[in-house]
Amino acid sequence: MTKPAEIISVYELIVDSRLYIPEYQRPYKWTNKHINELFYDIATHNDKSAYRLGTIVLHWDGQKKNIADGQQRIISLLLAAHALIQRNKNDNIGRKDLQGLLCQLKENMVNPTFTSEISKINIRSNYLEVQRIVSRSDFTEAQIDFLLNKCEVVVVRLGDVSEAFQFFDSQNARGRDLEPHDLLKAYHLREFSPHDEHLKEVAVERWESSDTEDLAMLFSQYLYRIRNWSKGESARYFGKDDSYLFKGVNIDTAASYPYIQQLRIAHQFVDQYNGQYERKIDSYEFSFPFQLDQTIINGRRFFELINHYQAKIDQIGAKYKRTKSNTAGHCSVHELFGPEKLDGFAQEILKTLNEYSARNRTGDRYVRAMFDCLLIYYIDKFGNTDISMAIEKIFIWAYSLRLQKHAVQLASMDNHVLENNLFHLIKYATRHHDVINYSPPKLHKKIDSSKTIEPIETLFKKMKYYE
Image (cartoon, rainbow, N blue to C red; front, side):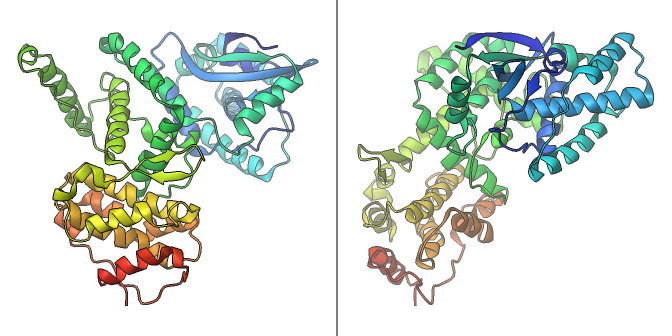
């Protein structure tokens, strides 16, 4: 039976010699990036009376405390403790209380062994990274005290081994990390400005009213891919290690960097404009000018950004819909623009993509995902300007991959984007013409001879992109 959760300090957690990493745990996969993010978060919040690092789930087996969840974080904290012990040995930390804590850690904390080569490589690399961080002069004794005594974790104790396996399986059996959007929700709730506390309840209520599968889809299929592809980076699987992509700056506490000034101006202006008494007369509300590749403003604006793009993608109709038979289909993007707004081949393209018989195959869904993401990114930056021509160019760019592959895999999609990166082009374009003037190469030979994609081939021929 699960015991009530308790809150303990990092020191209380890692000084416990009964901690044990069970065999069913995965390898240690944190990298230098995760270590730096952890210490950056700690440094950012070291003016607080306490800072919560997350939840640890333990299962007691006799005298052993098996780690059911939180292994990556615990091992990283153990590495930090070893690095601090080494620093004390080399430089003799001045505060006696900290010396005492480090001596207790050296005597009592566990020193697990690892058979996985992945774990060994990451542990060696991360230990060196932690040493570099804690040996710096700006990592003061006050920060050591904050890390050990004021950084906290929530510990949940599971009752028996079957419950531990049930918990572990529910989180990891599908080979996926815990849902990162829930971690982002917790992070940005902590980042709420004191001025916005009265809005927190509304943000939580709106978030909780959203279907969790829709939120997961929004992040993994659209926001994550667009943000990474626009930077020229791979975007295959969205896990909690990628959540840093949606952590930005806290307007209240961020340093006065020049690049933050434009965010502050927009943030304050929108609030001031919407708060004017005239709004009680005209009932007009000015929305924050979000962009898909912008620096995230932490706290309230993050929740507003998610609501904004959830509504926008629903409107565009590019979001996958689950039917009762659990097959994936697409809403009609055509509904957004209407027949009077589309010309050229755009109407026929959208109709074909929503109707051709092979559209629900895995590979075809990957290609459709490229098309959807790039169209959304274009509309986000340039609106409906020359939208028909944009649809034509995006269609040729995306579906040339479909005609050239017998089977499209996730890697095929990702590689196609990075090798022919129109996301990168849109990111740096200052006029929509920079995108519209893109000239896709013609296809001289089709690899996939399946009749199921003949409608796609027919369109390519009509548009003079297939010889």
